[in-house]
Image 1 (cartoon, rainbow, N blue to C red):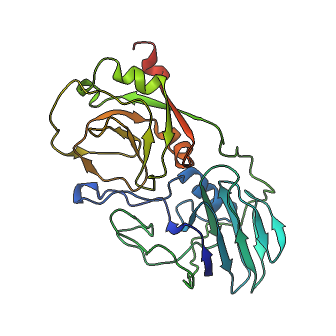
Image 2: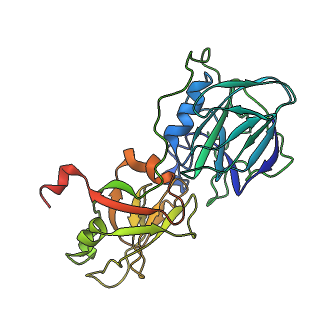
Length: 290
């Protein structure tokens, strides 16, 4: 498979690196792991096989042999040598075919899985590109040729179109749990976070979403010693404008974390695009007591 065009950002991603945080290596992996796993299932791969993650589409791929494909995530116009193809549905391309992926109508990240998986060399057990740490294969560029592996686990399922919901184009509503450092903020700060609208800024990437909205005021001065961070952490720098960490987040940080996103909502936030609104809500397990 050859990359002819790769849009704003195209990387190889699987489900990430596990058990290396103590050595200073983050998990990385597909930002929308749910969509990546679905793409692999649709072509009969292991869910953790490597695939392509496209940020805002814009890719053209050339296949040198017949190939079974599936495209999931942010819905994009798909054409194979001029013939339209469907999202969330496995299809076959002939040797010499070109697949063109347009810009998404909603959402941000789209996943292209090929039967057998993308077989670039693994680094610390993963083929994922970590844009912050510089681990894994480089960001893809025109002319890159990618080998196809043997990550098949069975025949492709007899599915015409997978029943999945498209990413939302309006404000996203996601659930958070307070802490672990909510005591570093005023009593009203968490209420401000969960009662206001924040907007995704253009200064966002796979590391995290920088948000613009009401500032979150601290009750304590000074800085914390660096401590562990997880995907979904809502970290607040001195500006008071929250940063929501995504797949390639740093594994430690010194700014306090006021809340952490529910892991089930990470795929939702991975599809947030600049200019889109985000509204945080306390998880039901704590909202009644708050």
